[in-house]
Length: 323
Ligand code: HEC
Ligand code: HEC
Ligand code: HEC
Ligand code: HEC
Ligand code: HEC
Ligand code: HEC
Ligand code: HEC
Ligand code: HEC
Ligand code: HEC
Ligand code: HEC
Image (tube, rainbow, N blue to C red):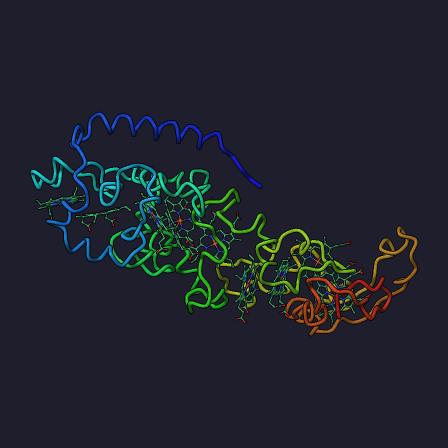
């Protein structure tokens, strides 16, 4: 868990300060409450649209204070109801930005927004009403993927790369992997680590396996990028280059990757005491470069995520992840 509360505590303190400041200076200061009936005399259209949604149908016990209806979010409306002056009523999204969230959080203390103030959306002053519509029947102001991509524009291109999770096809959503209301996890992830997150759905790769592949045990993101890649299978790089970042090419094919004669230098075997390659020499094959650089390693090493079956080993220890 990556919970860091210090900057957020400061943030909460500053919000409280703002609340006191605004209460003292706002245009509607000193106004009384008039009740929803009065508002609806002029705003019957909004009353009608709200009748269809959750906030329009709250029961008395769901309110934290005696103030009910429109004024729970818009503040006391007496002055505005008399003057009809839009400046005399609070409009959460425009006037106060993140301050609006305090109105929402009065009621949404628990549930999905329990950890809201610890998340990076709150940190970046993204307000509830940037994403949520209040008066219509819609939960969100836009279809979800469009909503997210509207701000996270760089992810639009990535989601369109040849290999991608089926988000734009609407089989998945960003929120399958991200908790936008901010749990305590880095990157607003729904899992504690990216590995745990991936394994929630791709359970076949969880193991434990008798023959493990260390990077897979460590972090799926070493080889995959869930937002989209040019290479197949969401791989950050094509094989064999992906594997060659950590592994040497196979001894024989690597050695023969030029066209000509070769001898194995004595130093290569004498030092290690192995006489296995003693006296090896020959003519390299023109195709050996292709064999090293243009073959997918996973053609032979099929169980790259780990396996319980020993490999059909030649000289090795049977852990070559090839079946
Ligand atoms: C006597 C009529 C009348 C009453 C009563 C009334 N309003 Fe209004 N309200 C208006 C008018 C007129 C506007 C400006 C409309 C516009 O700009 O389209 C307005 C605008 C608003 C706005 C938008 C403010 C802005 O900055 O754009 C909000 C929010 C609002 N009213 C809420 C309320 C609430 C809540 C109540 C009840 C407490 C209420 N109104 C009662 C007439 C009224
Ligand atoms: C749960 C909080 C909440 C409640 C309850 C609520 N509003 Fe709003 N209202 C908002 C927010 C937030 C906005 C800003 C527009 C937006 O982002 O959707 C808004 C905007 C408005 C506007 C400006 C026009 C518009 O649609 O942008 C009017 C008028 C208004 N509200 C009237 C009302 C009336 C009348 C009621 C009671 C029937 C009411 N509101 C109840 C949160 C609320
Ligand atoms: C008076 C208390 C109260 C206030 C203030 C309030 N809510 Fe709610 N809201 C509720 C209740 C109760 C529910 C229904 C139970 C639930 O889903 O938690 C609800 C439901 C919701 C839902 C889910 C709607 C759905 O269709 O499933 C959203 C989104 C939401 N509120 C956002 C907001 C936002 C954004 C604000 C601030 C502008 C806000 N609420 C202010 C009490 C409130
Ligand atoms: C960055 C966009 C975004 C912001 C900001 C945001 N939400 Fe949400 N919210 C969503 C999405 C998306 C869902 C639907 C989640 C899903 O489908 O799993 C949602 C769902 C909800 C629900 C319904 C949960 C349920 O399953 O019943 C509530 C309640 C809610 N949000 C309240 C809030 C409140 C209160 C705030 C501000 C403190 C807020 N949200 C800020 C995007 C947002
Ligand atoms: C109104 C603009 C806006 C919308 C809409 C929005 N975000 Fe964000 N989001 C931000 C900002 C600003 C940040 C913080 C700066 C950053 O890391 O880019 C952020 C941060 C994030 C992060 C990174 C968290 C971190 O700690 O690095 C994730 C993940 C994220 N948002 C996912 C989503 C998802 C999923 C949605 C759609 C449900 C969404 N956002 C909708 C503006 C938005
Ligand atoms: C299959 C799971 C998955 C899906 C679907 C997904 N993400 Fe992510 N996202 C991740 C993981 C894992 C990270 C890495 C988090 C980390 O490294 O801390 C991440 C990181 C991010 C970040 C933060 C990057 C940073 O700088 O830390 C943003 C922003 C983001 N995703 C936005 C989105 C958006 C927008 C969508 C939908 C269009 C989306 N993601 C869909 C898994 C996913
Ligand atoms: C919410 C479930 C879910 C989560 C979480 C998830 N995936 Fe997926 N993944 C899918 C689905 C659905 C597909 C598409 C399967 C298909 O097309 O048959 C997929 C496909 C893939 C593919 C194959 C892509 C291709 O081009 O065929 C890879 C690789 C992959 N995911 C890796 C990851 C990694 C790495 C993570 C963690 C960051 C992750 N997934 C998290 C559901 C998920
Ligand atoms: C060492 C690099 C590497 C790591 C780390 C890695 N993968 Fe893979 N993954 C691959 C390769 C290579 C392929 C393509 C295999 C093929 O073409 O047969 C693949 C394919 C996949 C696929 C699609 C095909 C299938 O087997 O279903 C999924 C899903 C997947 N990986 C999930 C994961 C998950 C989950 C993790 C973390 C637990 C992970 N990968 C870690 C290299 C890796
Ligand atoms: C991030 C570095 C990294 C990447 C990328 C990587 N590996 Fe590995 N691989 C390792 C480590 C570390 C081991 C464990 C070595 C050991 O135990 O001696 C290992 C072990 C292996 C083994 C078993 C060998 C043995 O003696 O246990 C094979 C086979 C293997 N990797 C093939 C691949 C293939 C094929 C790819 C590309 C799809 C790949 N690796 C990508 C780091 C990596
Ligand atoms: C033509 C099939 C084939 C291809 C292609 C292939 N390998 Fe192998 N690899 C093997 C065999 C067979 C073994 C030996 C198995 C044993 O000894 O148990 C092996 C062993 C290994 C080992 C363990 C070496 C050791 O010393 O035990 C690693 C690491 C490895 N390969 C990585 C790779 C990488 C990286 C690639 C891609 C550049 C690759 N392999 C391509 C068949 C192949």
